[in-house]
Length: 247
Image (tube, rainbow, N blue to C red):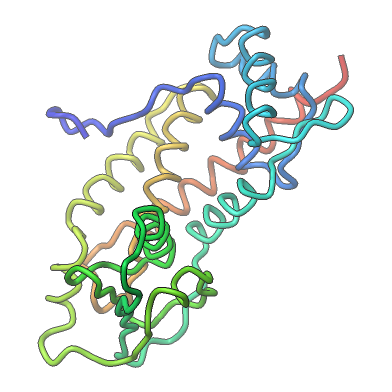
């Protein structure tokens, strides 16, 4: 967000246009001509999109079969995380918290980075170095890296849990940005601008803490941002066949 209160939007490169399109498409594969035509919505030349496709195949981001490009296994995992951020699987909260304590000694930098990424994916927050926690209201598998480096416990804070949640997550900041993105989606004109804002909204949903309702501030905008993103995706899915048709 800039000083004017406008949400910060990343400019879409040829790579990000291709990647965002495939991440939002089920199944995540499209012919080159469709991706070229989507790129044209943003004023991106055909040659630029095709160069990006070639580089993404070489980098292991995409697989190419007979003129059709699809996400590789690594990015399929990212698509699954994005799908989960739009419709997180939750359980009734009984007041308990998940607590993970790092017990592995002499970890390499790569191991520490992998654990931090895994904890972010699991939507845990770090209370102090080596201690991660969150309310136990989510249903999701734990990757091997957290089992290898941590021991897990359940418990509950003696102090106000809403106060602890506010300490662990910047709830006001997340909500403020979510409202700005929701308004920007409503105000965006044309598919290209809506696509750019929607990509930012989806990244923001990945950072949603998905806390139980009673730990959140009033008028929490998470559900509303998800509804607005879903409306965009329905619109984009209706538009995409126009670009995926035969030459």
